[in-house]
Image 1 (cartoon, helix red, strand yellow):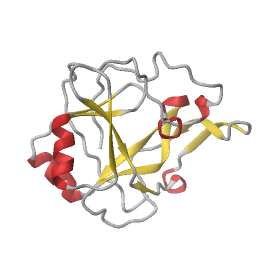
Image 2 (cartoon, helix red, strand yellow):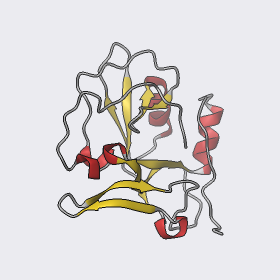
Image 3 (cartoon, rainbow, N blue to C red):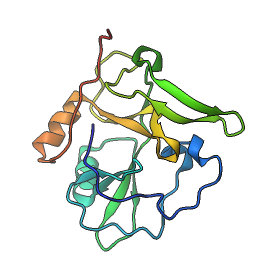
Length: 177
């Protein structure tokens, strides 16, 4: 599931420690308390540093559907927006996908970059149930590494039927080259 950029950076004014560039947004688990979000054009969007942000309409949709494993971390601003955090984790297959791990730091126990996320290869090659999931690996560079967000086929259908726009769904590959 890919969503449009919203022109915000969550880490713009946040001081991170020297090991932050070897971590990902879920491990860091930090948001800028001074950042004020407003006038985001899509119900689902992403900051430049890979935080998925949703509005109240999408939050209500998820609550009505009763999806487990979702957190909505409220953000500052006159309009209600939330960091959409997923607790449902699925295993990504970095060997099958030929994901590259670059710049390992032993002291910080992490990589500067993890490259090669799409198309998504999951270790279990079964249909996902109705719901939202994130990969166990986070991809990108430095502290902005984020997971892939994956939904079940039924969830995709429900999102589209509810009228949410500007969301790209890419097929998770169940057969690898």
